[in-house]
Amino acid sequence: MATHSGKTKRFRQYAKLKFRQAGTKHYLTLSAYERVDRPASDTLSAMALFLPFQDLSNGQETYGGGRYMDLLRADIKAGKIMLDFNKAYNPYCAFGEGFSCPIPPSENRLSVAIKAGEKLPVPPLLSTE
Image (tube, rainbow, N blue to C red):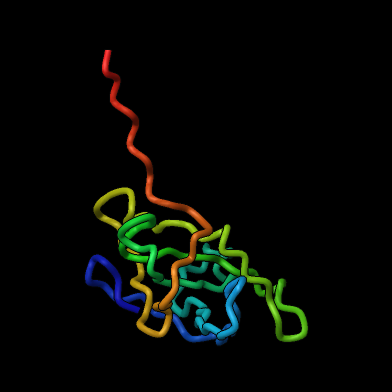
């Protein structure tokens, strides 16, 4: 998977997740990934799946490069998992330079806005006093 720094991180597609956004009739699909080249000390990656995605909120309400979700393998029951987009978060790249954040692949670019999850930081209001 390409990153914002130009490096590549190795992931393998683990699952295709098919879901409907509340209030819609059509299904959307996202791919969840497992990290292939994770450091041995990274035990969380061994238990989790990585779900990078972009949606129509990017660049306006949310970070332009997309957002991420982490899914626990243990939460997969009978081939199903609950997707809670309230847990979507901004990558480190949203907050500063020097990070190597994966860019969501084209298959994980949604044609709808996901209104849940972490938004862009709001700048403090300036005092008029």
